Image: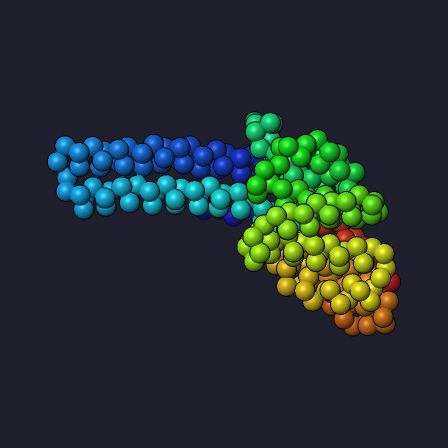
Length: 270
């Protein structure tokens, strides 16, 4: 299977469609197998062990199909997070949204995220403003708050950012203590505090938080943003060698992430 990063938008969408069709066919086959096994047991054609084996096989197949569904969208995510190709990422989700504009608001959130990493904060805000709170359910809520928070900070709209942060705190408080959702919300709050401190040029506070934020940054797009901010603070503290190392990373791996140009400017000035 080809890497999505080397494929065109048209090729990726064609691959997505093929997987979607296979997934539907797979669900039909699994359902038939389960119904057949139950009917065969009912009419004493199969033993209870054989029937249960077929039922479990059908259920396992359904679960594998669900993982395949997550995988195909996970591969798109890497176009932004690892390859840092913001334009391709946005183009893919614009095409996917056009096919079902009101069905999945996650497409719009992803488009806004692509614009954010590209540095088009006004476009990201415009996308987010089309989403009503009532449309955000379950897994969509955290990604929305994350993108909105980071985008407001880059726009310098600190009051709006703090209002969204309060929503994130409410969400964390509503979750079971220690649950994955609660931990994710707590991590995003910590990342937001780091980003806001950097924005206010409170480098002392930001540097205290950067190690924790570093543990949350696992992909090139996230690391480019983090390392650029760390480099700015290091230059302010006279730590030129450390700053250059971080800026070189952004220059090499930052792709279309908006801080890449700023990193290149700082390297030229060194």
